[in-house]
Image (spheres, rainbow, N blue to C red):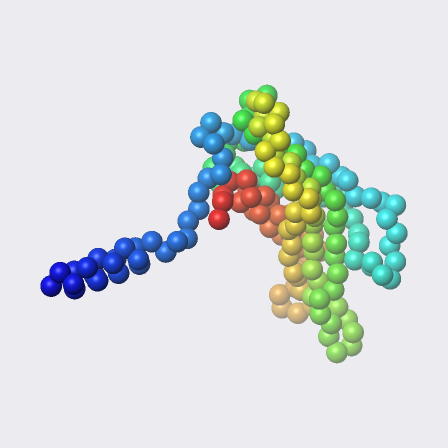
Length: 178
């Protein structure tokens, strides 16, 4: 009987925790964030050619990213959004690239589906000590969208979806450790 109880107990212990967890990577004293306006750092002198036709720009995208990131923190509520003088953390971002390129074509070589990718460089600071907590280059958000057929989306809807994906990834990068 002891042997059976030991096996049952071992099974409960082993299956009781799946090993999947999220935990905050931020210290307890960091409960608020200020999102600085994202800066447009796209190099407009970069040559666009048939070797790199996917490079483009969407006017005001850096403003859209800033707003989307702030809105995401407001909805999530894991960090309170505050002014720069009151916040515990300071997020700075630079828009580095906006790419849009075809993914699929129909039988007549018309584009059916495109991908939008947004790349930013990020820096997170302890706002009280000005200490850089982490820095990440080439952080990306993306979406795919259809331009023909029943699930057609507009280009602006796709850009907004890519910015939302980017903002969700930024929030997860700051708040969660997997």
